Structures are given as structure tokens and as C-alpha cells.
Image (cartoon, rainbow, N blue to C red):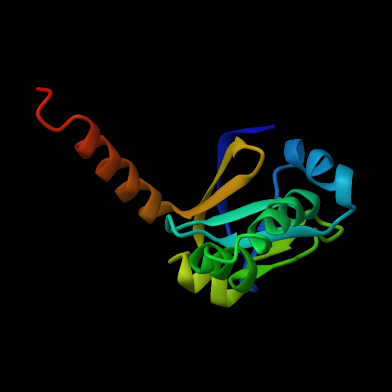
Length: 136
């Protein structure tokens, strides 16, 4: 289970350095291969390849769920963690999630969310505004 938040910067090639505390757990099941998915929530999802294959297996059986398959299959990549602990974030997926240089890595249980820092701040404000609307 992944928890916590890390403020990170992408390098010039679009690589994100995975914090040391998460590397062993991410690589434990699948070696260095991960899965990166563009979420319909405005961020990227990062998980082990085994977790992704499990989710994809369930989606592939659901013929009526084209939108979910589009994100989980079409808008995905299987990057590897390099020897320096970096993961290349595919430029098409980065663009789709509005990710620039400064990112926030959120551990949300079985996977991570990767947010553009400014987009996450706006998302949190939007959620708070909806949640606390009229409760003052």
C-alpha cells in the first residue's frame, strides 16, 4: 500500500525520480516494469505492472465500457525504473494530464497519482469548495 505525498521535479527528458522509500515495493512484484495510465481525473496513475494487468483483465471482459478501456488500454504505457530510480513519463500522457515540470506524487493505496502541482492545488480547492459549499 502506498501512502504519502512527495513534491518532485521532472528532468529535461520528462523523467521523474521515484522516492527511495517506494522503489523496492514498486519493483518487488514485476522487476523494473511499471504501468502508467492517464486518468480521467486529470492526473496520471502509476502502479505495478501486475496490478495494471489485473485491472485490464477485468476491463477487457466488459465490452460495454469503451471509455474505461480507452484510458486503461489506449492511454497507457509500461515504463521501467532505470538504475537511478527514474521513470520516463510518456510525453503524450504528460500532455493529456497537463503535467509540466513540477509534480506531486500521491500514494493512494494500491497505486500512485501523479499530478501537475498547480493542477492538484486547483483540484483540491474545487473539492473543498464543493464539499463545504453552504456550510459556513
